[in-house]
Length: 304
Image (cartoon, rainbow, N blue to C red; front, side, top):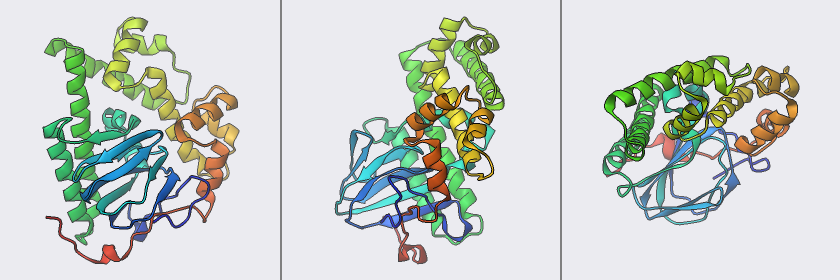
């Protein structure tokens, strides 16, 4: 259940200095519309499970998976059954520049079932079951191994996305390798320079393409426009700065690379569904919400 909810914002409080939370959930109450900074993954074990993300309804059958990115408004209606609800600290992923290549996976919700892609489904389901088993293992390095399984799942999803990209935009293998190399350089440049003005001319020059060609290929390759990618990276940086009570919102905007406070407020609200001021207030409040892990954390439960 959600214990503390301020507005529609939930703060996920990780217990015992962990960076992950997992619930073997059998509750039938409604989880009202809310959002948080955690990555959330849901997999029903018994009965189907309905999840609303924004205005989209997802009906998950048993062992199907939905990945909910940070900042997405979602609702879980009252329904009988059993499901795994996994949450993890997104900052662990966001702060690792080596994982920039899989960041497009968390740009939008991902629904995984056998009909979409059987191999992806098998890999993702195995990752979830491995995460479940490791969570209750009691190992001192269980969180590390859980993130390894999670990253493996994100890599599998990204590989699937790139495969679909190759199908919808066929090109020679050498050309695809060229795109991988070029966009890797572009993403690294954005990661290191998001706090400064980044022009389309500069990014196209790094990739060695015309502005039109770069814009078109970038969106196909990363499932978002170059400007959306930059704004997402800046917003992620702003989230971290907003946690510091000594930094004003105006300073956060400037240090995150936004050209004005107005632009910062608009883009932040588009991505996070709240204003920077609300985010700062919500996150500093001790009354923020958390889904409570019941006595399951003390038990070892076997999933057949």
